[in-house]
Image 1 (spheres, rainbow, N blue to C red):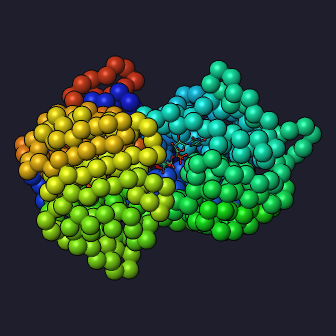
Image 2: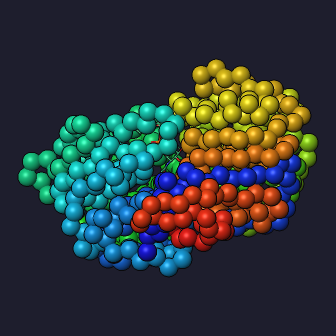
Image 3: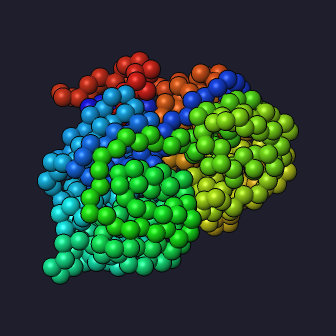
Length: 456
Ligand code: UD1
């Protein structure tokens, strides 16, 4: 069942209280990848047979996607971190604004709806407040595959061109290797007539995970993880069971938190080569890293300043830029952090400066002079990854910090504070004791209740 207890009003009355100068030790279990699970949920719409998704993280973004699917008529059964998805009875080809708002991944449904109904209607997607986030690459690709698309008043209307009853294979060259556009087009092309090639495709592990699941379903996708992907359209896709890959961004966040506190931890399970850009930078900045099977252990050493520049996979992930910036605030020396993927992903800089960091920001380049100490304070996070950065900063800092804006954190990190607690960090979710009217409820429960609530 989709968890209905997490409401905006509820989340906004929470904060994380962090006692600074913490140390981490032990083993942390890494959850399934949010960005994989979201697109795999959309891909499950492409078949009338049952899909079983394992290792799905319990997150509000997944809950939202689950609600979108249910609204389309999908029968969704949740058993802990496993979802059973049965799309044979979907009957609706529209996504309502209230469900789509704030979830960029909702746009993934367009390909499936087009192939099932020959038409689709959905609002322009929302998402984290980190930049313009256009969808032209999705739209141009779908048009090349034979869709007619009209965008008016924030609504995208798509239908198959002329009297065609299928999309048709074509050659698409993306202007930039967009993860979302590559995924949308792979899904649409997998049931199109004939061969599609996507050049300058995104190579991210989540794209590869999607291709693996689609191939299990009977799709014919070749060379995922390379710059040119080939898709031979098939007439039908079948059901399957698929395990979501581990979340490389969550994994990287924990490694960075350990490096920031001179701590030694082991993260598991992970796919170490998904994290190579991050472990390389951590090693360059002084940490010792060892890899054993599907686990990575980090050992502390003196923290040196290093430069990073975000890039599409296999480059340094933009999603770890904010946490790494928090780490560099206390590194020995000067570092330069360059964000190249999103134009508005430096929301954490002024907050880190308020904590005592020394960072000069010039557009998307942050110049950091490492300081000995930063101080704890109350801060409001404004996007998902900057909330992780502020929590890391709170753990490093002297004194107590309170981090607000947890609706962002809860979108993308499963049981984050519980995992930090197990590793030895003093961190608590505080709830404002406040009574809501009538159908609502009292917010005076035990902070431990929230992580137990399964999202989808
Ligand atoms: C996905 C991830 C997000 C990650 C990002 C980059 C999901 C749900 N989210 O987002 O966590 O930070 O990849 O790794 O998987 N662009 C265009 N036109 C388009 C599409 C994108 O110009 O049609 C641009 C974007 O503005 C951005 C860049 O391409 O500058 C990368 O965006 P993209 O790879 O599409 O990111 P998302 O799929 O939105």
